Length: 384
Image (cartoon, rainbow, N blue to C red; front, side, top):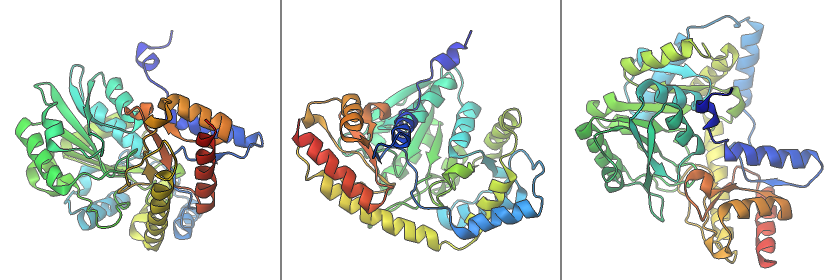
């Protein structure tokens, strides 16, 4: 009696691995978890205090479906100052997490028979969201360096192309699309009149001299076709607060708001007030977190390349490494499953991200855990 639509959904491999690892940990096993993409930092104190104050002030009633006006204004100000995109508050929607606004965006613009270009490797939920909207995912391989180019995209464009998904910095690879390629991709979108969903949740996590660029900032033509999605989850260590936000044309935002009005309605008031403080308050915590992740990134990249059978391109952004494990002779599912059972280390198989021969390792963990986990991987492979 379950709908075919839901039966066709593949479960999230990242959440499944994380759940199994946490269950083993509850059972007393010393598990090192490199699975879920979640900062290991606590939500900054000023943000928690803002939430407590909201409760004390009884900010507990319904808000407008698309979010509190003051939060929408703060998001518009942030887009203008950081991303160089001029969105009016009427072109902003607040959702129940970054995943929620991405889902609503796809449901708002995709129809049955449409094609959505999805660069691989990709975040696991993108494919399922496209299919839930009854559109067809068109996979676009990005090669051994995982860096999307306009040429990659152009090869996949057809008369049915309705949407391209960009995720830069990338989950799972950490790759950042070159600004020169983003400009060429923007021209392709304008010339062929298709939407671009730009998932920019890792925008602050660009390391070294790598440059982050919002595609909607380039010109008014591409801005009209871009749906810029983000959240406070990664930047402010607020994954559990579930606040995402999105900027797009009024037509798209109105459609997303209509959908949200009949599904979740407004996000949590308390979480919205916390997000308001996150965006408008001190940003010191962001800089400290990015600095720590950068140090871990360098360590993980170096250590992975010291392990026989594993090679890893240096991640440029986000907080993931995506090493190649082909020389071990195992596919990614076997590698991840056996690693958890035999070495008590949780990673996510690359097959879940559309890229066999790799696994994703999150370095959003303490240096102690990273050292312990990587030593276990090294020793486990030596025994094979």
